[in-house]
Amino acid sequence: MAGDNAVHVQDTGSALVDTSDLVVAGQDVQRQRVVIADPATAAGLAPVTAKVLTDATAGLVVRHLAEPALPPPDRSHSGRVLFVEDFRGGATGVYNDGCGSAHVDPEVMFNGLPSLRLDPQGNSSTSSATGGNQQLTLGGSAATYTVGGSGTLVGTTTQAGSPAVDTGGGYIVLNTPSSSASWPTTDGNSYVLTYASAVISGGSGAWTVTFSGVGLAGLPGAPGTSVTTANQGTAVMAACNPNPNGTGSPLTSGVVAKRRICDQFSGRFGHAVWLRPTSKSAATSFTSVVCVSLYNRNGTAAVLGRMMIQTAVGMNPSPGWNNDNQLLWYVTPGTPVGFKWVPFAFLTRAAFNQHSYDPAAGSWDAAGGWHYAKIVCDFATGQYVSIQFNEQVYTSMAGVPMYSITPDSGAKMMHFSVELAMAQSATRRYWNTARWVGTVEP
Amino acid sequence: MARRPVNCLQLVSVTGLSQVTANPLTASGQSRELKELGNWDFARFYLIVSAISGSGTPKVVFTLSEESPADGTYFAANPASDPIFNATGLTATNAVPLVSTVDPLYGRSYQVSWVVTGTTPSLTCSLLAYGGRRGADV
Image (cartoon, rainbow over all chains, first blue to last red; front, side, top):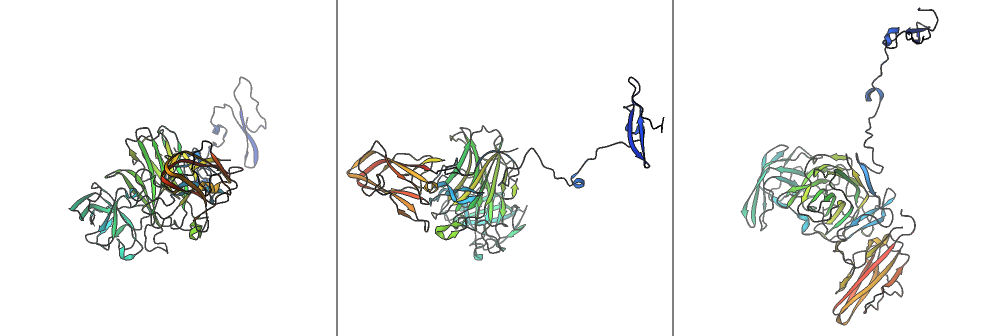
């Protein structure tokens, strides 16, 4: 009975008794419900529910435990570590498949450990490092191009042979030099144009290339949403691949520092490195062709994912560093030379080629400025996944085929490499890399 | 304590995987800069002259040079009374390696150069440096 101050003890075999102690109007009371299967409200209790916590209400940060952050120093957003090459000790598992030297460098330290210096030692990649590029003089009349636009652009050349232009569409780079008299754009900034088709006319010594369907490539970091050409007849443009470029395969006339593991094209892998231009003027004139590559071979074919950093891209106005900007590229199959480098981002807001370490040339900055690069490729599908440079992960190349070579009889191994070629110059320049991390990616 | 051999006759234009150990030296030349040695505490050099052809007493004189950190140039720094790096040079084959030890290695980088003389000379040589660092690999 209610209010009898007694606790009814359950009688075996009889009805079930459930007693609750609570305060009602300042009085301790006990209420009972007879059948445990009764709802909690049977004894006059409010139902108890679990509260769903959200970020906003509880200040929580959601972390995905399946992909923990890699151990520092690392800027990666994903991956499980397969190996780390941090170049401690006098030798390393990385080896130079090319010319010059890739040696452990105790003068340029990173994270308390030596780095790896890539030094072509003056060996020049003169002829092969311009693959697929066509330099043209800006012709026609001044015109404005916008993202999604479809204009016409004319280029000329006095070379003897027919221009090597992909008539089925491609890219044109308008790179502004330091002299305003040679700017191909009115605002002095560099831009990338896309075109849908090209027609080559003329003959030896007087070629004209007419590009159609020309618009502005809306790349991340691009300095504007429209560009107007200038200095027709004197300014130049680079059609198709950049000049110079890393060609489709790594240039063994430069340094090809690599680490290998074996894998039967099982899935996604990542290759992350830190790098810095070390020697004086290592990147100012874009003679240093530096690439980060991840590729595999199956005995009959090679599949390569590669990124390249085009340095010394002109921007105006720029606070004292007109040429210290970059354009990032990845390589995919293309015509007319079998591979096509595709631009995917401008970098204009962080220094690149500053603080050199080159004592013989009077530069003593051992700290330098390190950049982070990570390329992720899916070898099961033969496609790119993403490319990270410093803080930014780019995915515009996701699903794009990696460059492939068939036939290819190279060893059936997966390569994690960094390459440095000295294109069109025998001037001594070198870069350093540090802490290579190979990963398996989700 | 990591150790590794380095081919002291590798030219700067020769790729790393395709270099041969025994090189026919028919003219004077120099190796790539052996930057690895700059990170070593010691090195031991091994020279084998396996074949000689030509007339007029074919001869090779090896010089070990060290980099000047001030300007990046190389200057001769042969070990004293050394069987490999000396001004006398070599005119005969040898089955047992000639050995030279440089301990410690003080220099930032080293380079090997050679002067070949004679009439249509060819001296097939292998010259390897083997060395590394003492202590822990950090």
